[in-house]
Image (cartoon, rainbow, N blue to C red; front, side, top):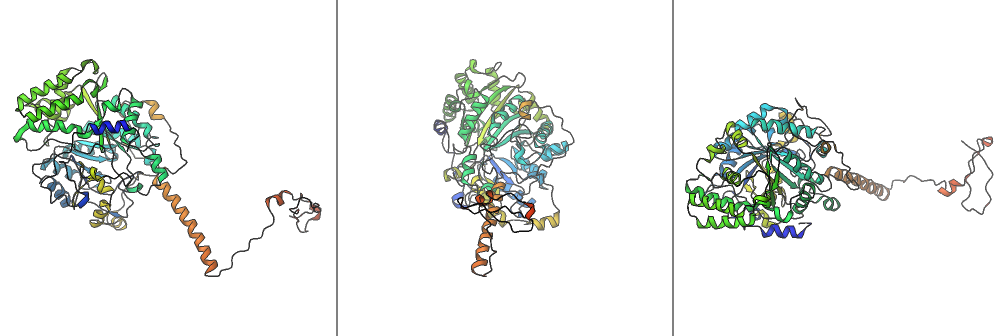
Length: 593
């Protein structure tokens, strides 16, 4: 669970407790031991398709390899989205469309548009960025449909750091995608799958990349590898070599970035639920939706935050200049008092003042900046949407630009989400899941869907559209980028700041054991063929009584070493080998060809 017991103890000690029990959910949560039992949820994950235009390793859903196509039709998409908002009181959940690659679904834009229509505040897409990199028009359509965040797969700086994804110019694709999406108004979240001894050296590099580009990157989600899907049959040797925990992440960020302390600056993701409760109390009964609340288990996710000036790039970890423990204690007391909106906001301002350490913050940060940052995030005061730009479903491009330009400070959030696999499965975590999958059979915990008894395989088989062969016959093959194939880009230009040394670095990875599931499968197939050949030989000899080929031994290595050089004057005579007994007299030299 951790390489640093003090970090694990710290994180668990900061856990605010379980969220409320799941309510009015009988029609949605109906999968027995894999049910979500606590919390309101945070992100509803919907797999639009299991088709993908890449062949990644690792891949927790084994895209393109399961032998069938599972793709939601339009009626199924609407039913899943409608069901999630039927629960009363209404849960404020973001919707994340995933896959496979969600942009390959013919309903991608319509699904985004419908999500905003039914009231979801934030719509996201978990994407490899290929379609966004290829076309500015695609980005524009996605934003106009209502896409707010792109969870962009991003494994490091430079094409070498992304080489395990098997696309020759993948880093260039990421840069182009960031440029196009930011220009269109879409916010970018870098999603980094971390595999120990493969790309864990990129943790600090990715954080520094975000710090150097504060106007475009405000969120990084590190995801320690989960050995599921394509990697479920991993060997013990590779699992021990590649296992990466949240404590690894905190340690690497501290060592590779500096000034960030694991047991001061990191907190469980559920830590923010204290502020969600305060926002709900302030907004009162007139609010149509509850605030977004992340009530997951402390071993599921952790996070820290940096405050960065967008112009000077001065920065500091937020817990260094703001006593997070003291602030949450005060906010809890204010929420419990429930003294009304204006007085509660005033008390929140006093709590910020009390716990603020101005000499520990980045140069230029004022207390007023903190007040505005809280107001912008939680919309606590009247007219917050007009002051900072709307984030509601009816937000416009002008709102998106206003929220960016009005604020000189970037609140860079660094999160670690560690999904479970068969080797660390814990039902206490699945029952508190905040990112359930929305499926044709109801909502299922993220980790239960991808691991455990294999709900993904069960549901996708129940509702599969066709075998791959049938799909290709009726719809044709889609393009897959693999085996070093490049993605064709209209332009490679970008305005992002990149460290040249990081981008050009070529890593030397130890390779005494297989690094991927594909390599392990090749070794397994080779061994299986060798065993089959041995069994076949025994069967032929003992059952079929097939004569075995006679092996003629002409001597040992020592015998051959003692052979006398050829004498071509005796050509045509038999070749003789010196006897093995060194005491015997050497034979007369003879020759042959």
